[in-house]
Image 1 (cartoon, rainbow, N blue to C red):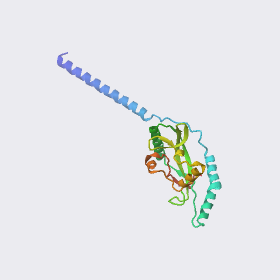
Image 2: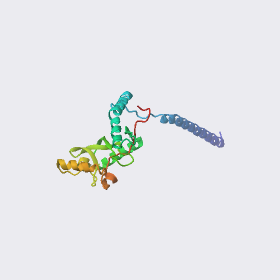
Image 3: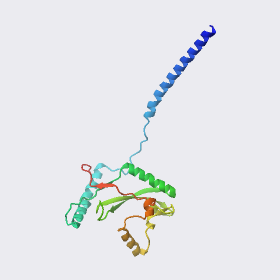
Image 4: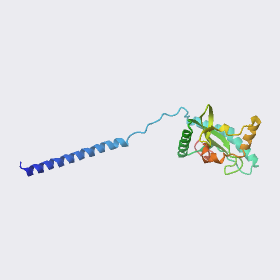
Length: 214
């Protein structure tokens, strides 16, 4: 075999080898891609606190019969029956807001070096003014161990976690009751808390159960 033929043969074999290698790589990619696409998300077990639909229906009906009807009667009496009053029977927060809220609580708690371990859902009422006048609502408060105590907390001006019960001025048993009474007329935190210290969430969408749920 002369030198020219040898060179041509060598380049030919090299080209064939590259084509085969490219085909193998392509085949490998085709085989791997579907496996990556079909990876399953880790599943979680149902919490023990999940209740049946039948139990949920009973809870809803009990509230309608034992609370909602009385609230309606009371509120309509206050307005001399001039306007029908529809009691609040649910408050909804969209999942995106709840997830963001939990991340925010964890973030601020981490900065304050405490570990939140639960969310308290308080019942409340908007009072006789505003868009939702006289309607019930809920607000959410995170809790954690702060020092040697435990309870709902906020972030103080110093960046440290503080128990909300210590936010209200103390003046003895009678003074404490008076302060709480005054607070009911001014349902807001100070400006500093509104700008980042308060971790209380409200402003969900509320109303009677959507038709057909229960």
